[in-house]
Amino acid sequence: MAFPSAPFALWSVSLLTVLFTAAVHSNTSFEDDPLQPMTSDETVPVGGTVTLTCRVAESDNSSLQWSNTAQQTLYFGEKRALRDNRIQLHRSTSTELSITISEVQLSDEGEYTCSIFTMPVRTARATVTVLGVPGKPQISGFEHAVKEGEKVTLTCTSTGSKPPATLHWYKGDQLLKGRPQVVETVDGNPTYNVSSELTLEVSASDDNTLITCAVNHPSLTLGDKRSEQALRVLYSPNVVIHPESTLPREGEKFSLRCVGNGNPEPTIYTWDKKDGGLPLQAKPDGAVLHFLMLNKSDNGVYVCHADNGIGSSEGEYTLLVQDSSSPLSTSSPTPPFTSPSSITPVTATPAYSSPASSLTPPVSVQLNGVNTFTDEARNITDPTAMSTTSGVDHAVIGGVVAVIVFILLCLLIVLGRYLIRHKGTYLTHEAKGSDDAPDADTAIINAEGGHSGAEDKKEYFI
Image 1: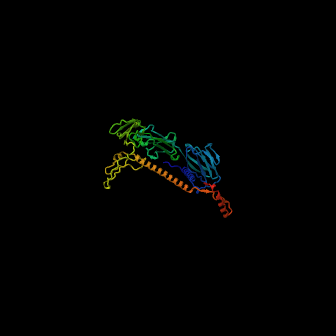
Image 2: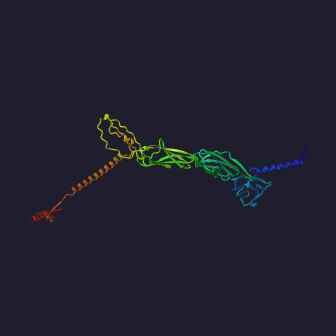
Image 3: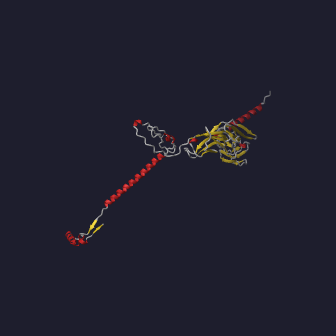
């Protein structure tokens, strides 16, 4: 076995010592070596701008220099060395040299070197990491509507990310768990394509629900890039029957409308009646069943069948025809007087009350078997019966008459007081001369002297 010669071994040891010293110098802090340059690693997305800063604690008037990954000088102090308009001087002092690189590309990634030309030369490195910005995700696998209860598989794909992006699925605001995503490399490009699959079993409530695929990546704010897909679900109709009126009356027109909420909307409607066929006066017209004239015999349960091609369902409505509106009879014979002990207790049976009124419901009254209204009380369902309306009208008329009588009495009182205060007054001319006399004696003489003309005295009524 051959051993290296002594000169060669000495030379090797010296070389290792120099390299070790350079390595120590390159990692020496300000406290150990104030001339050692200091840098920091930077991360920037594609298309962004990065700033590289190199500082020393003290200056000995030596120049700072920045070099790129290919060891090409970018700036030596304030002097540009490489003609690249994307690289600009940011700040240059005796202790700092900062440059900016705009419109960063993936090829700009790597280690950049800051050097200060002292003896020995001191250097520091800064690693620039360029993030590949992922593209907007694309959702596929849902080109057509699916039937209720079936499964659908959606695929979300995003390209151009570095490092690989993470995909998240949402149903409305609910986070869903998809299959583990697939990461693929791109030939000749340091970026990645990622994809994820989601399988759902849809129901009628999922119709028009938004399914969202969102991209999570260091170069993006969460939710910056997402895609949405609305589910379209085909399902059987849900049938509800709406009556034209909540109080169908005998002898009136009436209709029932069948509403089928489905996707698609129902196109076929059929009507039927339980325990028998449709009455002669009932005419079906698609989703509407018309009654030309209601009759008590029309009472029963009516069924509507709706079909939209996906499925069919039915809805029911119970029709109860009420008596036609007519005033209650008030000319029933007066029952004979009976003692209180023979009076049968009153039985009050509330009738149907519509939401339009909260009046006291009619009752069936039986007093010792006489004057019984049970038949009418059973059939009366309208709380606004004529007897109640008539009572209200009589009260209004009575009030008006009382007001008129009161006004007339007031007028008579006022007229009487007026006549009493304005009685007749009589004025005569018997002592006409006394009005102008200077004293009482003269007035008496003038008055007495005027008696000769008594035949000319006249009386005037004022």
